[in-house]
Length: 252
Image (cartoon, rainbow, N blue to C red; front, side):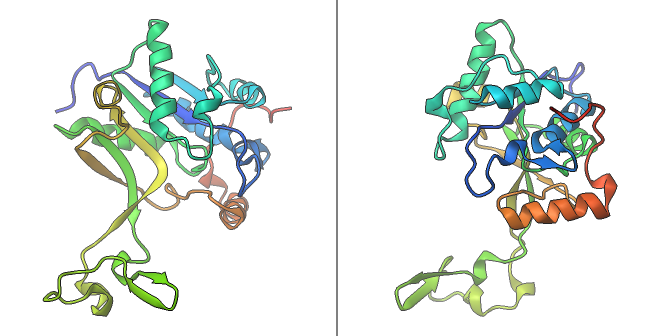
């Protein structure tokens, strides 16, 4: 049963500078606007968030985020902004800083700028599913794997072994028909939602009990390299509705 009134929730949008595979991808222009603008707009237009906050280590990124209606109450410290920095570091830092300022939220959602095809309706649908799931710590966007891990191999020199070995008496997955394999899902960057207590009590962004949120269409499309970027650019030209509408003039 959905609680009434519903719990409060904050949108956290990570946008550190210094991306290498697609340089400055979080602010790279897509259909006339910086990439992060579409995630900010989707969050604001969803109507579920008490605050939409961008976490960045760059004053320039912060200026862009504010132009599109997000808050950037403080910059992310350098020690939480490296290539290998785990999400829990900046999430905990942000929530504790806001708590110190008297702003607390029951839940949080991580919305990554690299999923620009996530819509306000995507977010509302996920929030409804999260609230309807009793006993879960978090919800995470997933999609069905196109390449089953049962058909994957680890190569070491001139030998290889199955990524997922079974016991000797079992039928090897790599020699099984796809129809005989269990359905497997992979997470994408569209969204995550969780109770804030999992951060403060367990120092995790997911907790122990996770619910799946099955993305549809292009909702889970995640920009990781130039090929992904070119795909989204083509989609923005051929399918105008794939990106959320932005009320602001382009930044700069």
